[in-house]
Length: 190
Image 1: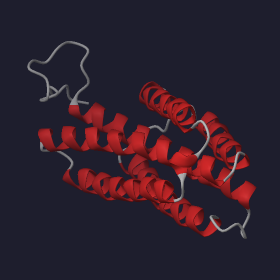
Image 2 (image 1 turned 180 degrees about the vertical axis):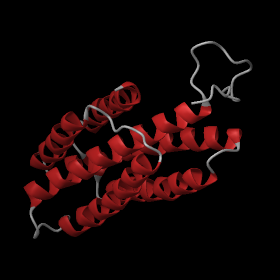
Image 3 (image 1 turned 90 degrees about the vertical axis):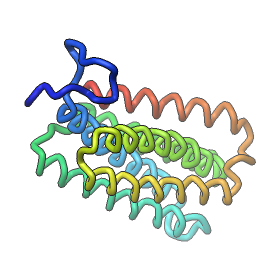
């Protein structure tokens, strides 16, 4: 890999990632996040089953996450990027978070969705700003923009379905957001 300076910094410093390395990191993190999101919705669906009134809504969001995941899987392969070594953890943690909040009821499941998608919206926006400032990877930026819009749709659906009416919403939401931000940090490194 070339050591092209990160142009969003005033000067290039030793140890900084090249743009190519940052793009690889973005794709790895986004793949891990979409994998985790798919597992969260799978956990919720496992608890609610097919016939709960919220299940078709969750299934819709789950299907979109599968599309996102498939795109990032193809980018990993195309660009020869390793996935996160923590994938087995994302598999279990995502499902447990989805199932756990669903066991608390529909509102808690929607609170989970709202919290996760709020963090992902901010994360995708940060990535888009970097990509735009570099003038690199316009197709990746376009993909992220599309997926970001769908994640915002999920957050809005959750809010419309009484996410904020969950008893202890602030505490639950804050804990989930912290977990998501930690997962993003870990996926960047591992």
